[in-house]
Length: 121
Image (cartoon, rainbow, N blue to C red):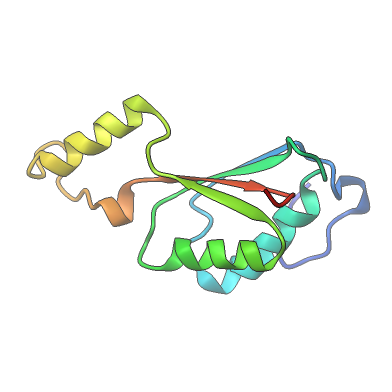
């Protein structure tokens, strides 16, 4: 099955997912509304269902996506330090004078974790 963000979803998958995992999907603002609608339509309506997104800030793109998520009646939490190994690597890249990752830019490269729920907290 191919999932098109701008198309209607097949009725058999509406509200059927406990968890959605996505990465690098929030860069283009023109797709934010469609992506938020898809997440809302696919998540089960339960206390435990959630979507996990990993995405860097990329200017104001991530913050704009979070605004759209909230406008669509979903709750979200932004987590910067979600794994000690990932965090330590990030801090190394930031302070390493570009030796281990020459083009590392926190805003462009470090993935923040976004937890999206179908219920308001």
